Every structure is written in C-alpha cells, then in structure tokens.
Image (cartoon, rainbow, N blue to C red; front, side, top):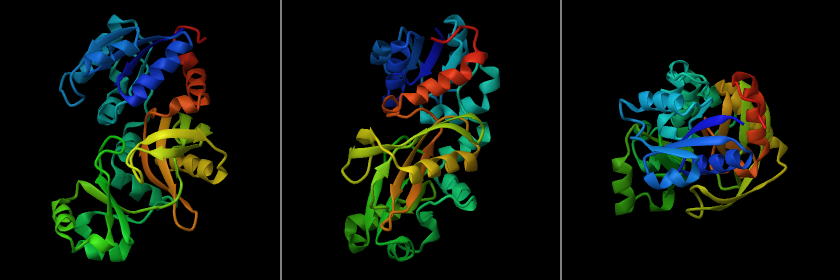
Length: 299
C-alpha cells in the first residue's frame, strides 16, 4: 500500500484517479476547494485555489502530517507551480520537468514546440496576427477554433465559421480576443484522448488510445464517453508528443483527424486526465515505476 496525496480530488481527473487507487488498496488523502470532494478520499482537507501564495506550503504540510509517500497533482492551474517546486515539497511528486510542463500548459507554446519538432498540428496563430476574422479564415480555414491559451479542459472553446464572420455577435467576439487566445484550424474528423506515461523525460513507457465517442458540446468540448481503440498512427503521434516536449509522468492529450485523415495534436495536459480509468494500464505503469521511490511495497 502507498499513501498518496491527490490534488483536485473532486474534479473529473482527481476523483477517477482516487477511485482507482483505493480500489487497489492504496490510501488516498485528497485536497480540493470544494468540501463535497471529501467523499472521494480516505482523508480530506479543503484548500484554497492554486493561485493562493500559501498553497504549496499547505500541500507540503499535509503530506507530512498524513504520512504521504507520493503527491499526484491533477489540476491544470497548479501544474506549473508544483513542477517548479517539486524538489521542496518533501515527497516524490508525479509531475514532469518544470520547463516541459510550462510549455504544455500554454497551448500556443505547445503548438510552436511541436511544429518545430515536426509533430503534426493544425494550422494555428494568435488573433493579433490577423487584421480581421476574414483574414484569419483565409489563412487557417473556413472553420476555426478559438480557445484560451491557458485553461482547463474544454472551457472557453468556440468554433468560428467564415460564413458568419461579418455578423454582429461574431464581430464582437473577434474584437474581444487578445494574445491570451489561440486560433486553430478546426479538424473535423474523429477525436481521440491518448494517454501516455513516461518514466523518464521524453521516453514513453505506456501509450493507450481512447476514442471520444461523445463530446459535451457536440462538436467540441470534453468527452462524455470514450472507448479504447487500435489506432497505431495516433499512438505513434502521442509518443512523438511526449518525446518532443520532454515530458514525464502521466500525460493526457487531445488529437483529431483533419479532412484527409491525418491526426493532429490539439493540446497537451501534463497530468492524469478524466478518462484514465478507461486505460487501466496507465496507473499500473505509474505504480510500477514509482515503486522504488517510496518506502511501502506496492500491491
């Protein structure tokens, strides 16, 4: 048994991970802003948001008080800070190198890094790089996706259509965009949620491809349901992403096919995702890898 501290235990990723860990006999201490999340762990503490200046200190204190042997962050908002402070939190932290996590956390930096490494991505750009929505459509395609460069999951995703670019609401939305947003060519094909584990930076040890069979917003958004599929080209792409970014630990990403069938990477999350239970080999690979780093034997 391992005593694990899971952050964001009330969220889709954290609650799924906690259930899997407890089902295998591990002790789970959870933290979350929502007190209702107490139901998901063996022990619980309500904490402030990741932006609070005392947040990391709280995690360190709780980990020591609860005798935790591993910290697994699952909240996008905290990943950059946790990765940068992993060496001072007092226990092993399942997170990638700070620079790689920073790149993955910003969708525009992710696109730049992957494109430079030759990893397929959709057409992309910043709104400020185009004089108008019409110019953006002419460059990137008749359907575009606009989304915040830094955000959780499918929050804030908009599909922009060239045919509506001149309408009042579309013009108002375009005028509201700034450099905190990214534009991408809309990929209309099948969407996937590959999950990867890399024991060492850039070296995938486990890859599973999950197909998103239903999306929350219809054409975009988080997955309502997924299923494991055999898609070697998507698996190869997922491995190339982790290698190009130099990530380690669990990695969750969104991939879609272009009209010609080519899979392209939409975004990368350097953490467990909400769908990890559909790829049980992911947690198995993680626990096998971290076994030597903790004092308790793994079950």
